[in-house]
Amino acid sequence: MPLFRRLPKRGFSNFKFAIRYQIVNVCQLERFDDGSVVGIQELSDLGLIDSIKKKVKILGDGELTKSLKVSANKFSKSAEQKIVACGGNINIV
Image (cartoon, rainbow, N blue to C red; front, side, top):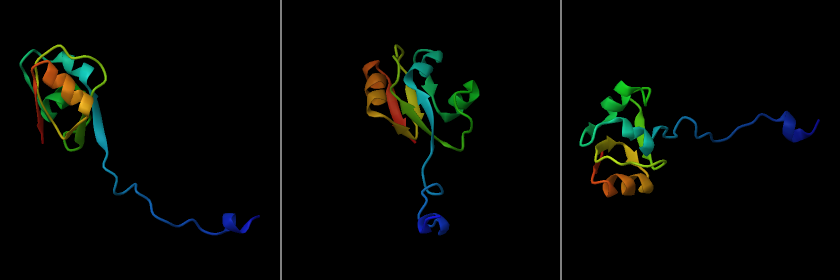
């Protein structure tokens, strides 16, 4: 057996330090009424995210036709553009 397979594996692992987000797509925000305020608690109530203690990121997959006020930890650029284009507002928590 080669020497490199016999030696223990050591080194840096980013698993403990990586920031993990819960993902919500823009098309999933269509469930809310026009003009409503969408926060982390509202997303959890509908079952779109698992926990309110974890961070939430809004991605721009899909279409949005309603004007919403969305609060989350992070937004993708396409999600920001789609929400603002419909007359909504974004708020970074």
